[in-house]
Figure 1 (cartoon, rainbow, N blue to C red):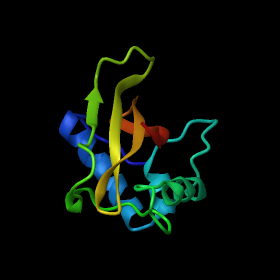
Figure 2: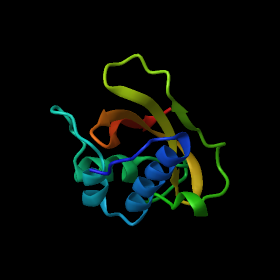
Figure 3: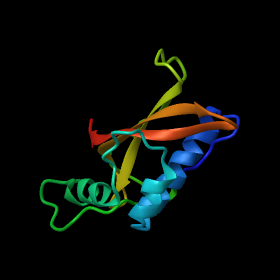
Figure 4: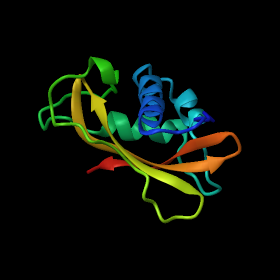
Length: 132
């Protein structure tokens, strides 16, 4: 699990981009391990792979989708990269929304996270990975 020391909007988004880069390398095991987990978490490497590969960027798309590195992505929708520090949930410092880049474009597949407090900083918990 990646610890974000002194979390700011920029450091949180950089951490999400690190996670995106793991997905772009198709290192789903490391991507799952990067995140904090909840007791009832179902976010296995296989589930991450399935959701990403099954998502269609275009109706006419043939073959599986693949995550692109965020810095190499152009086109598609205007990406949503938001950090909301106004969470009212216990032990949650922020809520994060990050559109996932697929096949070189920003897509409508969005990862939503909770930023949870821990000793020495905070960590990301994947709340959902779905079409927004």
